[in-house]
Image (cartoon, rainbow, N blue to C red; front, side, top):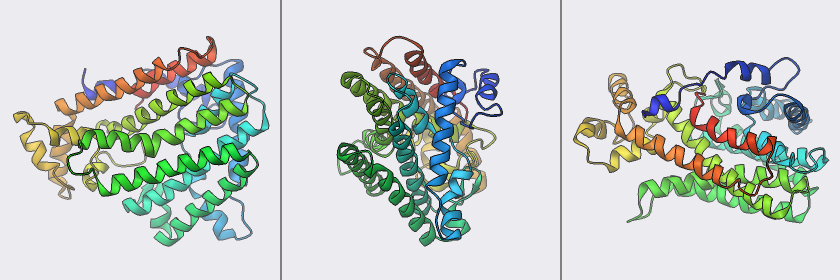
Length: 354
């Protein structure tokens, strides 16, 4: 199984169109969700999320409102709110706090994107100019802070336990970012370091999304814990898939040009596996990925070599292992459409192409 084939779309375009049909809020992670009452309920919940999300960007200052809504209007997967809403389907999915909690997680995610783009000096986000390139680093950082403040305002109404969970989640987000920035400690395995960073930076907030959705819907505590563990595994898998798509995609469907991470010297899992290996067939590739690749010809060469490499295949196998581990967490989730959708998400993560 090659990395490229593992990330090829699987003929679900008609389902994606159904989920994004007129009257349904756009979400690019909807192809694995069923039609019928469950899909309609999730659609209605996502519409409420969108309303509250955009209300959270309102400000007396037109400029602040424009900057705060910049990434919201650019679109996005809404992966965290959809997962929160889906987890809530195991209880009282209509509870008002479910939507507020889902928005808290999405606002937190959006705020981190503003800050990430400053750190990465990114020019594009979701196919649009990043806030830092459109305005300045200072504006991007302060806009992220504004969104964190709005998330905290909503969170205060959800109770002290929710505040505590969010604070611990935010601690993991920041710790993961710091650990990524400073790199692995002396003697630490770079690959294990990378995967633990992904668990902190991405998995933790995805896990909290599922926890919040299930908790505020009144789902049994043991099931909440299983859903939280499931969501952290699937969150890491989702990020691993993003990193592989950056390599195998031809059209820049993520809003970035293929191989952006290579050009910027961002060491994702396939690159780390190349660097750690001693395969003679990857000697030239190891030389190329030792740092950022600014030369266009070398970038094209590295991308072509990486797409056909054993390291990409091994990285794809790691992606599959996380999806399988997530699926294994569903044992105590009641049988039915929700569990089937959560299981389908495990398949979707390893086959999606955008």
